Image (cartoon, rainbow, N blue to C red; front, side, top):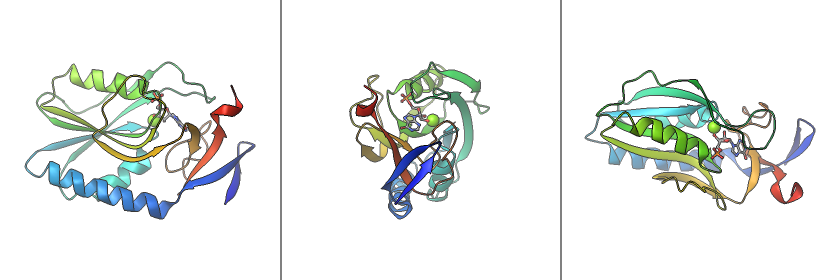
Length: 182
Ligand code: IMP
Ligand code: MG
């Protein structure tokens, strides 16, 4: 199925049924791993809001949930510098923290947030990302729980956007092929 977002064609990549199966499995895995721990889940906004909402309901524990707002992309598809828009409210020290991100491209965003959390000395820190782009992650950020690995394409849907549009799409679509801009 194709649709048009901000004047570009978008082509279906991952169906919502496939996403929900994967999210369920990630939730089960996290439930097992944190069974005896007091878990603090931190979502990176805005991109992770839908993934996080589904994931926390697939986790059969009693976690605290908080957010950080950072922005790395503005109105274009070019990576920007990372800007902290709203900080984490919860105290991190000695907590078991699980960081939740929609997708890992260069790794810059996760690297920034990860360093910030580590500087506050958590008891542990793990990362859960729905999607990782195969060619990237120059920062070598370790991902402990991963949903999907995809080719280096620009995607939208399920929380991810192109110029702030497309976040509410239940499926994930490819909207740009990197080869076309280089
Ligand atoms: P990174 O800092 O390069 O790893 O980029 C990660 C952030 O940029 C993610 O939080 C996404 O919100 C955004 N981003 C990266 N690639 C895409 C994409 O293909 N579509 C939409 N957003 C993206
Ligand atoms: Mg994001």
